[in-house]
Image (cartoon, rainbow, N blue to C red; front, top):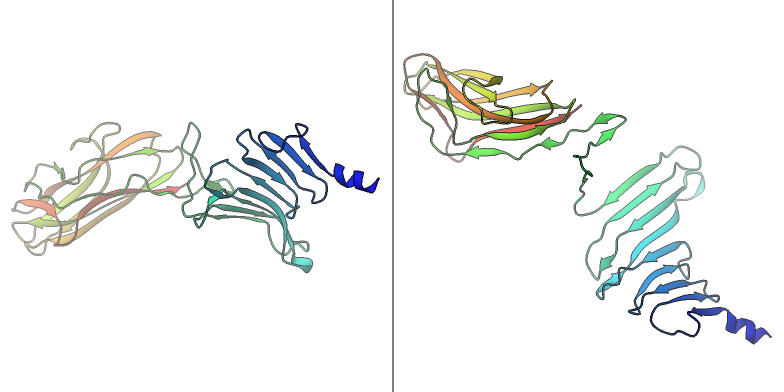
Length: 278
């Protein structure tokens, strides 16, 4: 009778199947395994890791399936309960992990979520994701990289002219977000003592012209004909949602020389926008 019971502790479904699509229930170890019709294990429950669930992709080179486990972290009154999720992995290669922990038993250690990965990306569905903490949108940093140039610009006097080398900088505004625009260059003139204005204009969805909306500006007095460094930076608030296209313009504000913008050797003129959040 005892032998018969031992025999029944291992069940294979469909009945008698030793390979192919099947469910294995092992009453000795407590292991439950599900195999697909290619004889690849796709799910493992219990067994020696009774607090874990292993999910397999079926890839022939898979070294470890996705691992979902519940654990106790620490000991005593500060112990926490956690669920840990590991991505499937190839042998010797990295994989992502998510750890979600409870508040500690004595309430002194807060609950948290930890992400461990070589790269963490947040991708929205249908819309750009809005990352928030307690209802406040987080800064996103650069919204469209950095527009740079070392190309020479045209020398002008009182005609406001675009820095075509750096060109246009287009980005999408999210409702309620603040932004900061920065443009840096060296302002030069053929006559020392001239004043040069640099202006950042916004053409909306179109390339801006010297009559487009003024968003930021700065002025520098040129001490020598070798030029002086100028950085224009301005927080932009109240921008309408949608596409905005910025560009830098320059013009002589006072003096007698021909003025232009360039950069010192080894540097670049730069225009960029940062998202500061809400």
